[in-house]
Image (cartoon, rainbow, N blue to C red; front, side):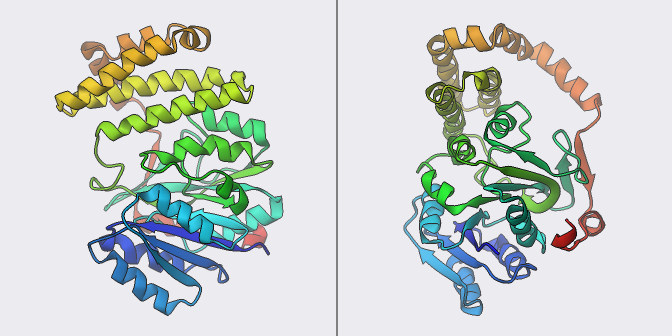
Length: 346
């Protein structure tokens, strides 16, 4: 059986950390290492992590000055000894069978990367995005090129984040997270996928992705521009690796994200932030004019029309009346939906 390292970057997650670490300690897979990287926490996170490491011989705690989640992940990856790595955020938690299921699928399929489904976890309920797959659907298998298409399309079947995935460690080492970036996962996912020969996705929701307004993804700021820069990096990747066919997916989504970010900046009522995204939109339109014309003709104009106040209001009203693709569950229902079956029958 292949070996596994779980890497958990930590920064001021004391209210949630026991739930996270308890879910790791209760995994049905018994033989794996855990690397906790405390990124300069000031709220008791370190003390909680230290307590758990004293209880579990295969767990270790690394402390560093506050350098961000990217550096914390990179440090953990360098320290890891497993054939595969799994990245868990310090406020998320796992189903008991998560690691065993992911490692079993990887071993059976000889896969370089395995992705599982997940729940958006709120205090009172759970949501599952059914636009890509149904939670009871079948596993899907990809080679490199099909996986890149699945990653780059507007509703990506292969998600643009590192969590809820098991990844071969040597591939993760080749693709370190960029320091100081928000949405750092989007900067490296295409690089990771391009190095994988075989990938598997299972829609089974094995991961709880905690939703909280105080988290890194919970508020809007100028740093959100990093995601747009990640699309620029992906465009360059497509060009440099002669995968221009991917641009028909990447470029329209890039334009879509430009308008979404500009609209969100306006709603923030912060004039300085709004100005940053207005200027970015104009500069991107000028810089990528030929690219937009080739791979996304009329998308800019359509996006402008869509985001006009009156039309935007009408579209929002239509969305509210449309069937909701997010499946809603109670926590008690999840026990039945995700009942554990032995990996030998998965």
